[in-house]
Image (cartoon, rainbow, N blue to C red):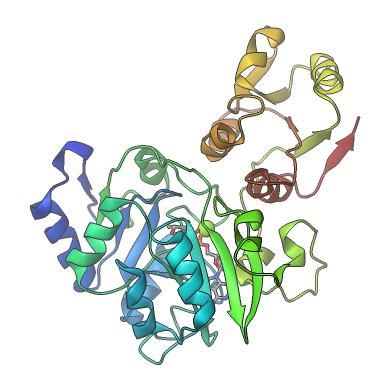
Length: 340
Ligand code: TXA
Ligand code: MG
């Protein structure tokens, strides 16, 4: 199919109305959010949702998140309770997805056969204007081919999905760069399934019973059934093996300096000059985890475009926003850590 491309300076009421029409009629539209780009379809239309799985090459048991234009719309699609109200008041619109029991209007194709549904009201204005224009909730996973890093620019989306979707809306670079925080609410219990810009500390400030799913930091055993089906799939992994270096900056820099020619080094911006003669990719400012979050997926894509045999990167901390980085990087590294 021919993919329509709506560039940043073409975004206006008329082009968004047109994209909304495509969605309402069962087509696929890629749109920007503050986290990563989403591959959208009408969440009330099972045939449209099936097209998402086909375009991404996504296993059909991996559920899609439903995007809404206003936090109050959640009750049309899910059975909400006090906990959702508290979360939405504090963090929505924003980078948070809340999993709750689904209502019947959401087809089971969208939820990968589960009887729960993830609801997210993005902060990005283009995303919300598009959902309003569509007049229906939008099911959208990240707009990458399954297994690849999520796209944080329209260029990444084009590489993966040109010719496989009806339209791509270019909203520039995503402000956060890692996917939304996912929490599940079940019988009053709150479980963090995926860390993101809404941190565990922020959730703990609202509730005194937040649990963290094992798969957030630990390797799942082969036969484990994770709370979030997406956690069992290979994700973010570059084709060369990635190793996380666990130790002080001094030790890491010394270790990287001794690396061979076919090793690619992921280093902080201010360290670039230390590694002339080595092949490097910068991954944001040292100590500034927001800038690292914004860079990570682009850096992993750039790493894949080299023909290195091995990749070395610093191991992130596990606190605050860094937990989101840790969660993505430890999976990209298939839990390979080198203790320095
Ligand atoms: O920031 C984001 O969340 C982006 C943007 C586009 O909104 N979307 C995104 O979607 O990252 P996706 O499909 O790439 O990741 C959603 C994750 C998957 O791992 C899926 O398994 C999990 O959420 N998930 C969705 N619905 C679920 C449910 N009902 N129960 C458990 N896990 C669920
Ligand atoms: Mg994804």
